[in-house]
Image (cartoon, rainbow, N blue to C red; front, side, top):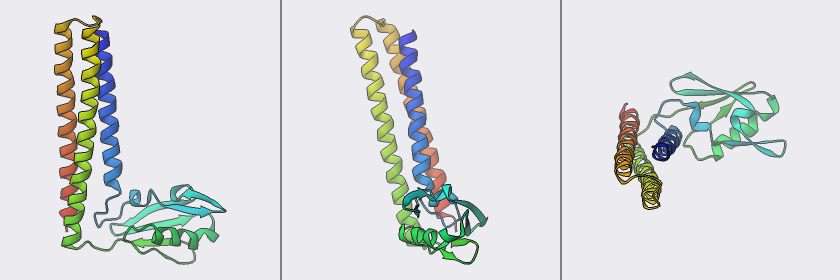
Length: 187
C-alpha cells in the first residue's frame, strides 16, 4: 500500500502546513499583550531597501504590555518608529535616544469581539483549505483505484485514513481558534 501511504503522508504534511499558516495568521491578531510577532510584517526603509524589522533590530518583550526595539544602528530609530506607526497595527511607537518603545493599549470589549470574529473567519478559511486537501487526496486515491494501481479495498481503507487525518486537522483548527479566543477575551 505504498501509493496510498504516500498520499496520506503528503496530506498530513499539507494539513500541518495549513495549521502553521493559521498559527502565523493568528499571531498577528493583537490580544492586548505584547507579542513580538505582531511586528513581523513591518518593513523599514534601510538605506533604500525595505527590510523586515527583525533583520535590522532586536525585538523583545520588556513586560506584558511593552515591546522594546533596539536597532543595530542608531540612525534607524526614526525610520523604525515611522514604519510601526504607519503599519496600521493600532499601536503608537515612541523612540528615545537608544530604543523604540511600543506600548500595547488595552483592548475595549467591542474591539475584542471584532477580533474574535476575525479569528473565527481565519479558522473557517483554514478548515476549507484542509477540506480542499482532502478532496485532492481523495481524487488521487480514486484515480489510482481506477487505473488499477491500487486495489479497491485498499482504496477504501486509504479514503478512511484520509478522513481520519482531515478530522484530526479540523479538530486542531478548532483547538487553536478556541485558545486564541480565550486569549482575546481575557482582560
